Amino acid sequence: MDSKVVSLKSKLEIYKACSGGGNIADCPVRDVIQGISNKWSSLLMMALAEKPYRFGELRRLVPDISQRMLTQTLHDLQRDGYVHREVFPTKPPSVEYSLTDLGRSMFGPLHQLLQWAELNHGAVRAARNAFDAADA
Amino acid sequence: MDSKVVSLKSKLEIYKACSGGGNIADCPVRDVIQGISNKWSSLLMMALAEKPYRFGELRRLVPDISQRMLTQTLHDLQRDGYVHREVFPTKPPSVEYSLTDLGRSMFGPLHQLLQWAELNHGAVRAARNAFDAADA
DNA sequence: TTATATAAGTCTCAAAAAGAGACCAGCACT
DNA sequence: AGTGCTGGTCTCTTTTTGAGACTTATATAA
Image (tube, chains in turn blue, cyan, brown, purple):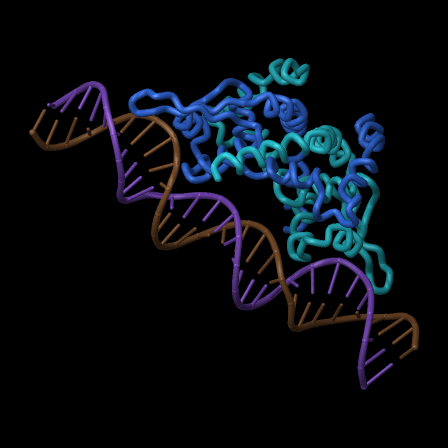
């Protein structure tokens, strides 16, 4: 469990960064994290980290996102500075989305979490099954 | 930008782990990530990484969560194996929540992301302001 | 010429999720 | 007898999300 050691190191500092103002509610870390912890953000970041994609390509790549949520999530990622949106004057005009430097920087740690998920989805699935079996 | 170098290394492998079955929709990484990318999970993980807390303590610590969502989020974290729930036979009975080994393991990479957020919330805030100023 | 397709969205309506706050049971203290 | 503590659940309202039709302008096919 060296992950325990790592996490213990500066947990408190992070935490204090949140409760510094008095309570945990208006906290810069929360402000940033809540922008990316939603159903579609990490998935789109993952796609765009591979290479730039156009709107329709992303739609086909993630078949279960609605156009509405794709528009909105890309808009939010652009607003927070992670994604760049560029319109090309083709007929009809096409729009390309790509990661900014800030987006690539954020994808570093996000990628670590994605790797953890890949390595440990077996354990999570097992925990779920055990839990569901217990209260049945 | 050495984060760029890091992220470029194994982006594609992760991505393939998702589109392996044919499409990105039923993907183990998504399955795990969606369990923790919601408004309250990372915040509660952050609190419980510091030390175990009881229900009421968590409620006071995160003043803007409703009891309903606190119950539900803790339940989901417990189901996925990140959190342990223990009832103590005090009068009235108290319930303590703590991280499991799996939870501490997951908090490692999550913590990296939280640190990134702490370091870069200035840049994100600046991007937001620029974006909002532009379309006004 | 008329029909169909493609691009990137927007609009409307229905369904699902989240938030607010009352309510509950059991026991201790006053 | 009344109040407070515990950890919840129940109901109602508001917000968010999902499904899918519709748009504007151009190119291509029949």
